[in-house]
Length: 111
Image (tube, rainbow, N blue to C red):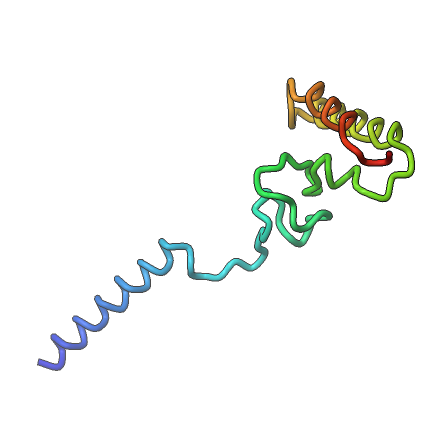
């Protein structure tokens, strides 16, 4: 009888452990990506990227790379244009360049 109970408990433990592992809860992530941008936190230079933003290998979006206290609107727009061109060259974005620069030009940043 004890052997049956022991076997049952062993099988039950394995089933529960398999469920935990398949659910991604075990083992806990050693190097997580808390902002879900595809770049691990240990190498992410721009934490807290907005969900769905396109990022470079450093985990930074165009918006994050061009943020700051701009006193000149033209320099802000130039930053966005230059950075989005780099994103195109890296294959991160394609046709969005014009729309991104247009949105920057219409913003109030640096005005």
